[in-house]
Length: 453
Image (tube, rainbow, N blue to C red; front, top):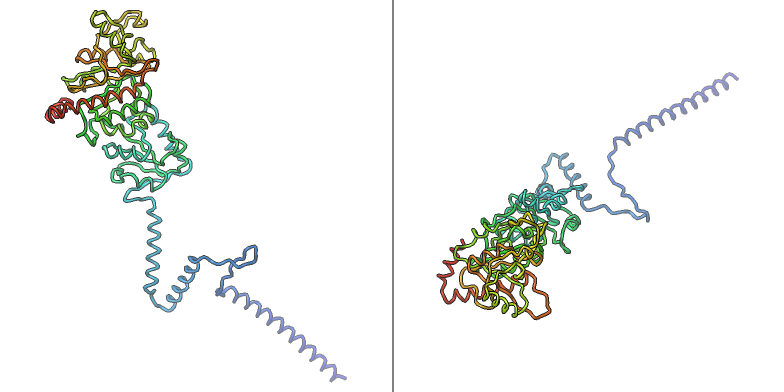
């Protein structure tokens, strides 16, 4: 009995001991397993799955980067140095990093990228459109590749250039943009501030050029002929007249104070680069105009007479030597314009009309435009359609023995505008002067050009 009891006790103790050892071993095994999991290095990367359950492929740069890291780890663990292929890959990565760092350079020129909210373009464009700013600050606004290239080739100094793409900037002579600030902006921003229907993606701010310092090309084709614009208020007309003057080979263009600003955006578009093909002197008094002309010059004035009967009446008036009024001349102003008082220097005691006062002006003989009138260094005065010629223009024509030129047109048709009349008279003057140069020789042309200079 005692023996069987002792045997049962021994069996119970052995079972409890085995259970305790098993439980303790399980703790040891689990703890070791967790420690081993923390120290384990994964040998395979599981790629994410898309919504369809397909495994997405990893991009080639990421795979190459993992392979490169694995190879470098193997070589470093074995004590070996990377091979030539690894050196080549390393140099390629450095080169790509260098390109990313110098992406704001183009042919040695550094440009800025306008950040969101950059208002420099809007401020510069809005201010440069003001005539007061252009005159006081000495800045002008040019838009378009052709006009900017003409300005750079003539020697104008750029201050700031806004462009939409690098290709647009490459279309300009980059060697002449060294001292300018280059800013890359969005094309939408240029489109907002542009005056063109189809913007070209480049706008530039230049210092106001000095006509005497610009370098003009094709001066060998010029003739001793000057254009004087008197009270031309329409920007389109003035731009067309400047373009015609450049095409006719005029020596220079002189603008009175009553004219619209020559650097107005509409004038620039109408002139098509004429500002950089011949000297244009703006805001001149009549004393300054005489100083820009040679002593032997003959000044003619343009008239908007409509028919030949007008000439017959003028001949009869000249024969009778009756005093004339300003209204007897086609484009001569007969009424003072209150809005133009700061440009005029008339010494009148009252604001009454010239017709009422009976103001007499010198009588200038009339002549058809195709008759001989350009036989010496010549200047042509064309007045505006609204205010007409100044009294000083007719006085200067009388002083230099000039004539009043008119283009006859059919009855019941309105007179030609200033730009059309100027183009006809300028090319007729060029034809007569070229004919005179051919008969007199080039020596006469050189002497005439020396008088203008």
